Image (cartoon, rainbow, N blue to C red; front, side, top):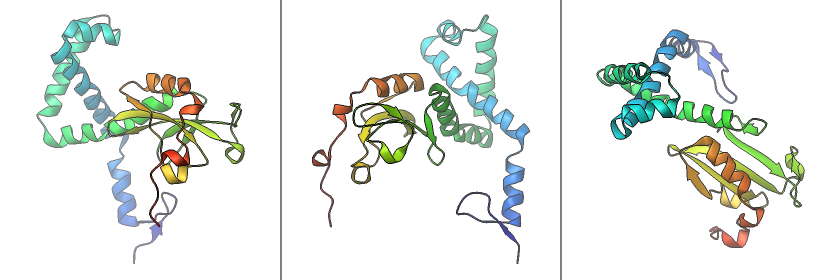
Length: 194
């Protein structure tokens, strides 16, 4: 019987599973996959908005940057396996962009949700045991969702979503602007069946 290794909390891997993950996580493969993914949204935006508008949005000095990404996207789409691998990177890249947009915020490693905790009188704290409110943002369904929750009711309500955005910095700004009074209370949530 193959020996099992704990790669993640609460999981075990056989030797074969460990070798498969090691091989699949080859940095050279992922560097190419990241380049492939990077090209896809740029090519889509260029098709919708025009090459020059995309060049300006990227802050690129020349049109060559956009043209190279359009060509790379065309090559990526022509290979189904390469295209699927590139698209599989989207959630991880969106989570990385969210974490980057929220310096100093706490991070839940399991979901990559970024959050800040507050006392009942609105003081920003790090201790979860004395926190009353949480401002948070996370990636879900391909968008950045944000909201303010009253921590007394999160078990009944789960993640509270006040809105969504396609821009991680905007999601952070909106979460910070949302007043604590908009956090739903237990009376606002649906009754739980016993």
